[in-house]
Length: 452
Image (cartoon, rainbow, N blue to C red; front, side):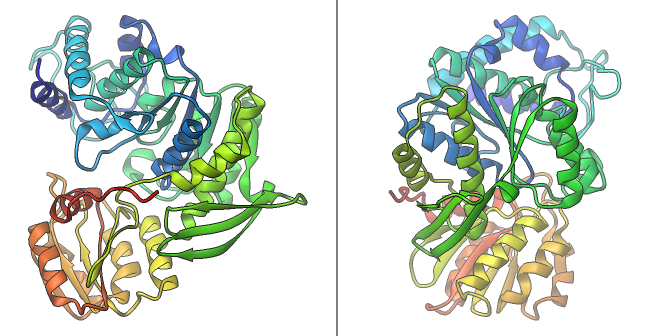
């Protein structure tokens, strides 16, 4: 099997939709030797900030001399980004070999036909409420592939980002040394629940008996659910907001410097290259998780923490492309992300002097997102993400309520070209709304080497 054949097979599994439930995972993992039981892990859930926190954790562990697996989703440019060892994407040859191996396993365990086991629609709950086994999905097979690669690469730790929800997410077969829940906001309400409390209950599903748990959740309703889950399962909860004090000393386009320390204890000064004050919160959560790992026996010096935080990168999140005009890409794909992006733009004094390029998926609360971002812009260019789930930009014209100058260019490359041409050199172009838009923008602008 070639890499292109492997990718075609994996993407072909997307026709089985997205299912909640762990039965398929247990069968698949059991057939290949339960690789998920053969490495210590950190499982990172939440709404926004999961990927950034995972990248920070991975960077710290690597700086401490450990061999680290990192599993995140989605990717921006290539499937291989999802599965990394020490910051290096999995080789295409390894994807091909592992996919070929798993294809045989899937065929043996899940013999299907169009009549006996038809594909399920996107966002089906599948196994919930009876675990009606159906064909494994793209994410399930990809997760098994990642765990096999970690074992065969002999990782010391794996940092794993939860895909969606938590309780029935494919990654929740892990029994992590530390679980992190970054924050909780409304998302996929038709799938996870209509309230913060209901969504928190799904996210809290990653908390196992006796687990050490770090959370950055600030919504009282959600925090109460997580606290209760920890009490019921005998887990130790470390709430960074009640346990740590931190203060940002510098936040600009070169990075951020902040001091942090446990309550009533001396502080230390740390630096991160990730932009936006919300990333400081993610860094504090990563720091708390690392210190809990040390209590479990990990050898991680303070210098390794400093170096790892400073070196951590996470493309597509407040990523800068210097020039005239400056271009900023940010994968703010829900209202909470849009609010964080707005806070950054206002703090850095971009408000009122930017062009907004915006494309979104149809299941997102785009009105709330544009309500946060469009008033900052002189001009809004609506575009279409490269996805079957993309919202028709012509249906987003309600954005005229928030910005008087609205244009539509369905092709992302053309939208960015117009934005760069029409924006004053001293102003800024901001591209956001969906990670599919960010992916297209990266192909247009070219991938830059990360800052060190």
